[in-house]
Image 1 (cartoon, rainbow, N blue to C red):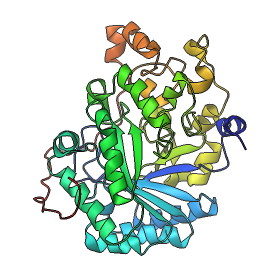
Image 2: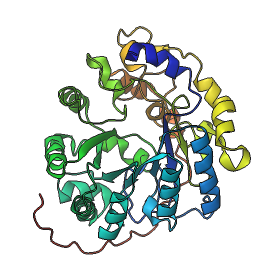
Image 3: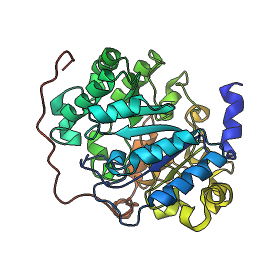
Length: 381
């Protein structure tokens, strides 16, 4: 079935999400400046082990074949392995993201012995200086140790996950070489103005020129994964790999640590809160939420109606528009033709000051010190 025939079906929504993100905890021992969930401190209301296990059973009953587990740092939860193993036992695959600080040799050995499991190690610079400026001192070495441990235990092709910024876009070839060295896959993600990212988005987002360069780089490397992050770039010509549409509430959603269900991981805001799994169960929220039903209705091209590239980019990212004060019918703020820049410039200063802000922060007030790095042998620096 072709992409063109799948897109209308996905836009109307499916009986279950094909990309379900579940943030297990807001607790995190890093304080990345672009964290989409403003993680740091654990929320005392987070789902208990029993509640989380019941949610996994419901996910399995809905025949959702995998779940993206994140945080915070999911490995901080004491029941992390219990929950992962329950997912696998119920034949729900797990893809989880980690900063690597808890992924020691023993953890890597346990992960390598688990089927139906994928691991993403986050790294936002191909060198210490670039990465640690964003993720914190010691985080580069921690991530590389985690990769060494996975490789040492023969985990297989894990993923290296990179948020593309103005500072690291020129390092993509180095990231690709690092992935090749480990036999890993490179996965790139778009920087959104969500969570703490709202405070640094204007300074860290790639320039228009860098965006055009990134588009060509991705076209030449279809093996690089993007999770449909960069579909706004498809307006430049040939479509990038993926569905090239906003799947929020249609094929994508987020369950946060306290069971709140949002339209996507990048819109943690009450305006995009669909319900809570504690109150009605996940399947009911997915099926009956008024918010999700509205998102599944045919949308208007709005300000993009006169652009010949709307069918390629579908107006871009809803979250990026929302947190920059734009309407859903406005161009993406990073529109490749500059229409988003013009739309943001047209916002009155008062409107800019009233733009939506992300949900209450769980950020730590004091940074957490990471262990001193150890020298690694036989690996790339």
